[in-house]
Length: 400
Image (cartoon, rainbow, N blue to C red; front, side):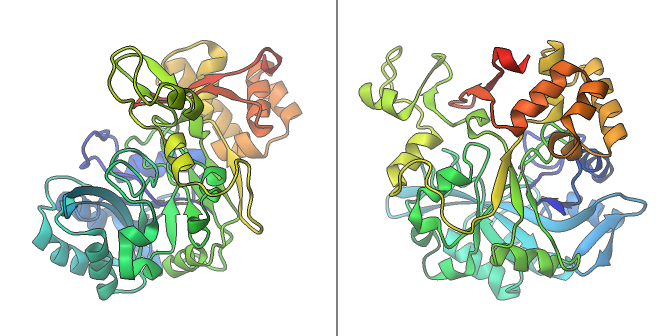
């Protein structure tokens, strides 16, 4: 089961108007996703749409009438608060067992913020208080820090902490996972021994339903039965077959740098610059890689035993655009090629992971097939993203 637990609805800020249930269902099916989080269950209008359109078909699992994929109830919460003279800004993902839980949780949460302002509401609670509130209603809710390494609004970001225990305090044992985010992958997290107890989950945090956003990161479970509790048990027990990861260099905050100055630097380079931009003289926006280096107590390439596999993938839409020399991912030709390929092979994940390369050479073209092969063999190079700028994919000459 391919599962993406963290997305948003059209009621979240900076989110596409196309993030509605029917479009999410259709695009997730093309991608190859089986289960998707609803996102934004605290927003009154989105919750009305969920109630009106989704039917509970298994324990805690919902589906549209004539829908192709399944949904679990989920939300991202923004906690902004002060601890002494420190300002803390942490985002958390919460998975919810059923609609009764959602109603109770929303009722309690509304005492600490206006839930109608944004699909990802801002509440006046500490991270510890949020866990306490959520778990008091039902221990089967699942809460974990969102995009854990992103410089802004994350547990290890500028306004965050140095450990899970510092953030969640006496409730840390009620937190079982953390979300790696687009700018980090499992090997980066394995370098921090304090994170060994936590399951690493990967989700898209999609603000758009198009396949280059939805499912760009995901978790793959082998479930004994399709139920909310079985998904939660798999997370708590670390029973994930593998995760789908973007290349961390592709994320918007991998290197440190300045968007306005057009400069980015590796940890070694910025250290030599004393973390000051040589163009404007201001401190560089700290990247995820530097933050990992600050907390790491293990060498690069360290791999613990018995950890799930992971696969770096680049969305098929982006590979098509690159192979065709088209700059816009939403160009009609890119979309026509994408849909023809996916319909032939059932899903995007099938094309990227499973279909025989010789078969692809015959049916999608040699250039695109070579790119897919390069992704499978981890032969992709990227100019790392920095300070809100996405990384750039580079294929060497042998790829072409």
